[in-house]
Amino acid sequence: MTTRDQARRAATDIRAEPARTSALPEPPPSLPERLYAARERKGVDLYRAERDTKIRARYLAALERGDWKELPGAVYTKGFLRNYALYLGLEPEDVLRQWRRERGEVREAEPIVVPRPISAPRQGLTFSPGVIWAALLTVGVIAFAAYLGVQLLRFAKPPTLAVSNPSTALTEVDEGTTTYTIQGTSIPGATITLTTAGRQQPYRVSAGTDGRWSQEVELRRGQNQFDVTAVDPETGKQAENPVLVVIRVPFPVFEAPTLQLDQPAEGATFENGAIPVQGVTTNATKVVVSAKYLGPAGQAAGAAPTLPPSQRPKDVSIDVGDDGRFSTPFDLTAGRWTLTVTASSDQAKTISLTRNVAVAYKGVNLVISIKGGRAWLKAWVDGKVATATGLGGRTYSNGETLTLTGLRSIEVRTGSSGVTYFTLNGTSIGTLGKSGVPETWLFQPPQQPQKTQRR
Image (cartoon, rainbow, N blue to C red; front, side):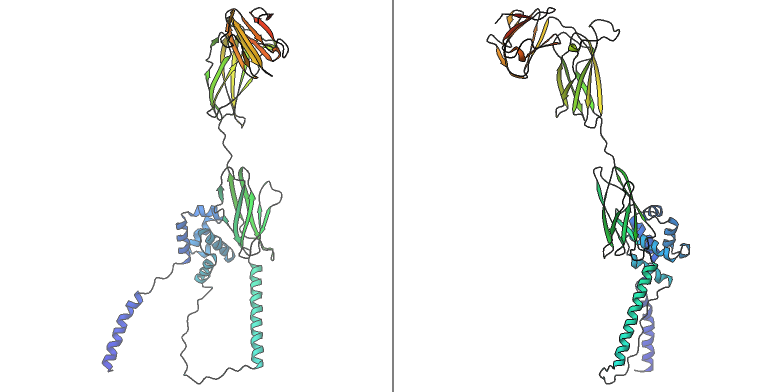
């Protein structure tokens, strides 16, 4: 090759060099850029990160700017970087290596190109006893030095601590939750302590060989606060940044019952029969009806009147149907009354409505109830056989009721007086004879019931 050809080829190589240089890959992002980008991906600001990591926002901002002089020291900076990396989902050890590298503590070795020596005939390897003992001694010294270094590093460095579940410092669970499993990481074998108010002994668990730990805790309604710390059992050092975990269990909300009365209407007057009480309720399992006597019908209100105990009506409890409806008759004697209907739930929440009614009986109103057995009945209303019983009478079972209304009189023949109960114009009379004894009774108010021979 001539001298001119060599010059032309060198010029061509020089012109091609910039093209190869421009094709080099872009340098990787710096550590502050990685931290800032990771926080942006997480979608949180510095103040939210401060609340979650318990690291001041000024220190987090210094980490993202690479302003290491603003940080309190190398030991604290390492702890901040490790916890911040875990919070941002980065590998802590990788972040620490890059931090050391960018601070100039670790210089990456550059490959050294050594000229290949001139080939020479190979000779067999020969080891003398002195060489072998020197090599073994050297390996032992290196191993012992490494062991001492690791131990010194462990004694000088506190254990790390991070909580991975829950992922946030404040977590709210369902109202029925009674337990929760808190999980995290630390150094292998570290003792993790979880302290909470209301529990005499804290929870304690040891981290596994991979540094992971898990502890199930009990929850109560309201706010449950756990202070999580880690201790290296060999050095006694405690983690520099304890973690605060708050788990909130909401209190259940019980709705109060609602109540609507269809009957009786306010101010209604009833001439005979039981007062119908009907309505509908929600969130209630029981309805109770009670009555207060106000005085004789048609008489102005005055001093609080009283009734004999036999005429005072008892409270009636009504079961609520699946559709929320309820219905019952309520027997009252003549006079003015205030009915109170109260619906209650299983959580002791109640609602009440009142109705003022008047009872002014006309003629004869007789309610016959069979209790404790069976009885054959035949009745005459105003001297005529009642349609309900017929000429041959009818047998009524335990719990059945017969209501008769007449203008002047009602006469009843029962096959068992002891199980036949009478209520005349709202006043309970009870039984008038003995069980198994047939009797006939005439009811003709205002006279007392009279025994007759009618059959």
